[in-house]
Each structure stands twice: as structure tokens, then as C-alpha cells.
Length: 602
Image 1 (tube, helix red, strand yellow):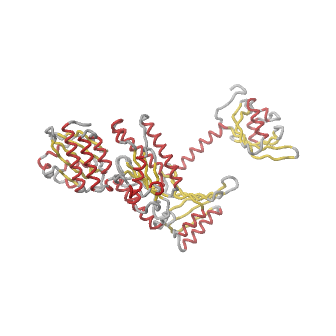
Image 2 (spheres, helix red, strand yellow; image 1 turned 135 degrees about the horizontal axis):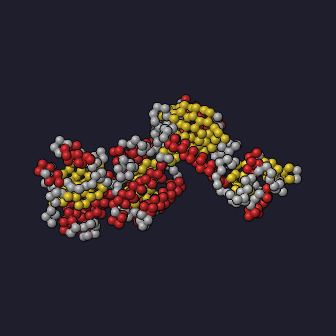
Image 3 (cartoon, rainbow, N blue to C red; image 1 turned 90 degrees about the vertical axis):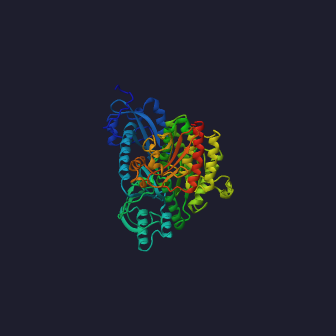
């Protein structure tokens, strides 16, 4: 490299930081050993002579300014005859006699950038380690007075508590999370944390971590360290020696039967059971706890499969679930309750924090899906109910959140609505729509109305067969639907996340199997295990496709062919088909078969 050229290479033997002091004539009055190693032993008497000519004015203005201007970036000449970019940091200004002294730190930008990368990778390594351990972490900042309890799951910080140490201490005592002798130990713990004790270990039995749900044997291990040269922060870990620490949302090790196969998040039954149980316990232990129930729906999802294909539709659902789970993190419970419908219970956030989370989540979803299909204009509508304020039981909160979702749809979609009585009135009394999200919440009359509307629309050509299947999977939480025709029962339509391709169901026309259909052409199997003895091959075929229960319905078409529609449930949570389900689905099957056999409709 020629002399006086700009050098941007990384040199590992170069000091990343040197210290020196200039007087009011820019003369170096003091320099540490690293300074002379970097700048050279025989240097100009005035430091501004080492600054690149184009940067001299900026440098001199910086030196002559007060402490309100702390930083400056200039090119400086070092002993090898090249210029390096330097970050100058003003530490202090003081006087010696009549001379004004400026104490500085110079940092080589290329070197410190490389060091930053090195330290960043170290941090990632340590985060990866704490990502797989059971302990939770706590830290206390004496400046803000805040204590934070968190852990790392899926390489993301999950915060369990973040509040002032004083408020945390008072809440745990007044709510009875610590009692008796353990209350004395808890007081000692808070004192050790606040005082910045060098090393401490405190053992106690309490429901501090579960917030009243259960009593745990806890061990707090902590120590203090200097954060900024003056204040000592306290950090440590919280262990549960008797059993593995539970996370707020335990996806790892969850029985597959509890998960939605298409997305990996909780399925409808599991998530509703979990949320109901959590709300019921909270209603008893802490009615003032900040919690929100959210129902989310992907806007215009029915047109996705038609416009971009089923594969992209599946990608949209999976991407939505992944982004939703990532956004919620350890702050709540996430599950899928229908085709493109999701439910979330958010814990321990304020309304403002919720709004910020929703804004970030919706924008993140838009970007992630735009990368997969730039032409697809993704949006989601969200309805939200607040625990305590709007209700203290799952059914009430669900209905209010669902009605708020309906309002979001009516207002043009692509938005969220947090229910407010003053704005929206008595939403349950004034609702103009029926709650119909998820089969567990549809009343029999609503199911009959759904069937009537489908039959009418499909017969008039206002609804395609694909839309019918999507409507049924969405509203009735049916995992898969297939339509077969002809003597070989060849599959002509199919929707759902089957493990294997659905090709044919010729076995339904075997003499022995035909006898299982009733006079109306209906065959109901609540548990496929009942087929193992008489029809072992059929059982294996269904089992291999993850089907645990099904409902089959035959009907004769106008074209002389025999048709069969099969409604499947996946996993191990078997479904018991109600009389209402059978009647309304029979209505739909007759209408769809009539449309298909009369004039094939896509």
C-alpha cells in the first residue's frame, strides 16, 4: 500500500483502543503505550497534523466543543504511513493552569467492527447454551429498579416478568405467593438482589414463578457485576431441582396428538382446553391479571387456493402459524381452530404493548408472505376481548373476540378490533351474525342454515365444489374431505393435509363393506380400530393416512354414477359424529353430488 492511502484492512495486531490527551493547541500532552505503538514514537507535535486534510475542520470543531458533543469520526495517519478511520470519543474536559485539556479515546473502526462480530458470535453461542437448559434467568438494574425474569426458547427471549423489584416483592407477598418461613427467605432474596450482593443462594418453596398456580421448590443463585464502571447489576438463575422447569408454552415434547399437523401449533381441542383451564384458574387466583383473547382470520383466504393453488395455500397457513408463534413467544398460548382461523391467549401485557405487538406481527406477516408470492396481497383481521373487563370465562371472551373479528371484517378487513363497550355497545346482545367459528361453537340451527346456504349456492353455480369443501373444513373443523365416483371409487376432489395421496376407495364397494352403510347411504366410524378384525387392510390404509375417524356418505348422481363423500378426522383425538352433523352433511352431499353429476363445477 502506498503511503497516505486509506487502509480498510483488518489487522489483528493493531490496538482497538488508545487513549491520549490534547491541549488547546492540539498537542499530545499524554498518551498511553498503545497510542505510541499505533501512531509512532516520532510524531508531529500537533495531532491535527495527523488528521486527513479533508477532516481537519470537523476534528477541530469537535475538540473545541463542550461535552454535549461526545463523538467524531475522522481519518488519522498511523505509523505505517496509511490513514485509518478512527472513532474519537471525548471522555472529559479539564483545565491545567490556563490550558484546556481534552481527554480522548481513539478506536479503530475496522478493528472494533471485527471485535464486535467476534463478541456477537460469542453471545449467540452463550444464548444457544441457555436455550437448552431448564433454568430461568433473572437480572436487576439498579438504575431503573427493574427486575426481569426470562429464559431462551427457540433462540428467542421469553419474558416471564418485567416489573420494578419493589412492585414484584409487594405483589408476591400480598397475593400469597410466599408464606410463612419462606416469606422471610423471599425478603432476604429481594434484599440481596437490591443491594448488589456479590454472591448469594436462596432456597424457598413458593408459587412466585407460577403466579399462584402451583408451589415450586426454587433455588435463586445470583451475583453482581459492574455494568458501567459505577452501578452493579445483579444477575442469576432460578432452578427447580425437583422437576424440569416448565416454559410458558411447551411445544417441545408435546404429544403429537395435541398438535395441528399442518402447522405444528396446538390443535383446536388442545388449545381450547388449555386456554379454558388457564382462564378458570386465573379467575380464581388473580382476576386483575392482564390477559387478552384473540381470534385471527386470514382475509380472503378462500381465493388463495383458486388463484395460487393448494400448495401455496398450505404455505400461507404454515407461514401464518410460524410468524404468530414467533410473535407471541412465551407471552401466550397459540392454536389453530379452523382452516384459516387461529386463537391466541396473550398474558401479562398492557393494551399499549398489545397494540405494538399486533402492529409488528401484522407487518412481519405481510413481508414474509410477500417473499413467497409477491402478487399475493396478504392481510389478517383480528378480534380481541380482554379478560376481567369483558368477561372471566372462556365462552364469553370467545364470543366477544369473535364478534369483534366480525366488526373488523365489516370495516374493510386488514385490521384489529379490541372490544370496547363504549364504542361497540353490548356486542353479544346486538350481534347481527351468529357465532360460527369452529364446530364446537356452532348451534344446531346454525349448522342447518350453513347447509341450506351451501346447497342453494352450489345449485345456482354461485359456489364451487372446492369452496364448499373449504367452507366445511373451516366451519366444522373437519380435517380432510374427499369425493369419489364410479365403480372403482376414483378420487375426483380432495382437500386437507393427508399424509399420502388420496387416489381411490374401491373397498367401499366390496360386498362385506357395503353392508356397513345404512339405508341412507351413511357409514359412521368413530374409531377405525373397530375395522382391524374384519377389514385389516382398510384399517392399515386409513391408519397410514393418519385418519382416526370418518363419516362416509354415498349418493347416486344424475349421470348414473355412484358417488361417495368422506369426511376425515386426523390424529388420535377421535370424533363422535352427532345427529346434527350427519343430517346437515347429508344435505350438503346431496346438493354437491347433484351439481357435480349434472354439470361439473370446479
